[in-house]
Length: 169
Image 1: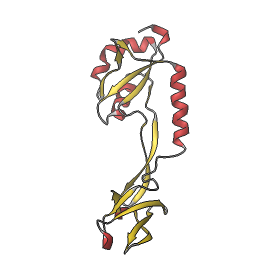
Image 2 (image 1 turned 180 degrees about the vertical axis):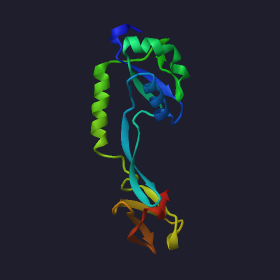
Image 3 (image 1 turned 90 degrees about the horizontal axis):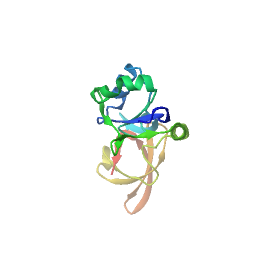
Image 4 (image 1 turned 60 degrees about the vertical axis):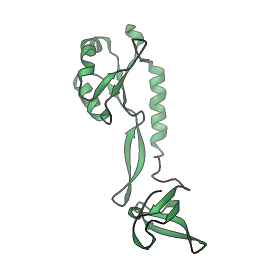
């Protein structure tokens, strides 16, 4: 560690335990950041927006020399933390400028959630008369329905169905 040059350390978490690790690291008095991105998910017949880590399994911890030096030796034992990221035995460093770019990227990304389905995605009907028939996602029809294109007796048909009636194909 180079002292004041180091702005942020990178922590590698256990699988899907970013929130747990963040909470426990904050409990040690550390400033922790976990950039998130919005993503649409189809659950229970409704498309809703959830937030997922922009960098799965990674957290950023601000290096405040006095606080960080006191807890450095205990970080690997914090619940949810797997290890400190190191290169050649040296702690991975992230300067303040790079961190600010990541945070501004997060702000831009947060304006447009990743869609549950993209136009042209292949899907399969899971219910009803068209069960197990392939279709192509065209667009959303509100938060509970989607519009699909599929081949019906040699002709292209457009149909609005509940989100719960399709899955990725």
